[in-house]
Figure 1 (cartoon, helix red, strand yellow):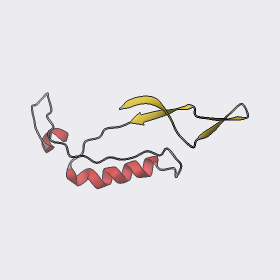
Figure 2 (tube, rainbow, N blue to C red):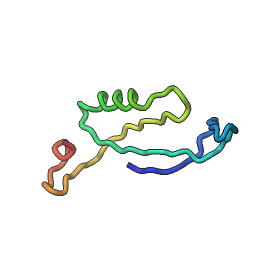
Figure 3 (cartoon, helix red, strand yellow):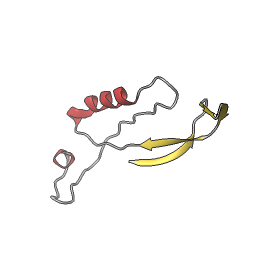
Length: 82
C-alpha cells in the first residue's frame, strides 16, 4: 500500500463556508495478488467497497504476475500467493 496526494479535477471542497478547488486530495494505492479463482471475487469486493458513484472512485488494473516467490519457504507460483 502507498499513500500520497494528488490533484483531482472537477472536485470542489467547502472549507469554512468557502468553496475551494484544486486542493491536494489523499490517494491510496493497493497492490493485491490473487490466484485465478479469486480474481472476480476480489474485483467485486473492491468495487463494492470503493464505489461511491463520484469522481475519484479509482481504477482497477488487472495484470499477469510472471512469478511469485515466498522468501521464507521458497515456494513459487500459486503456492506462494496463498
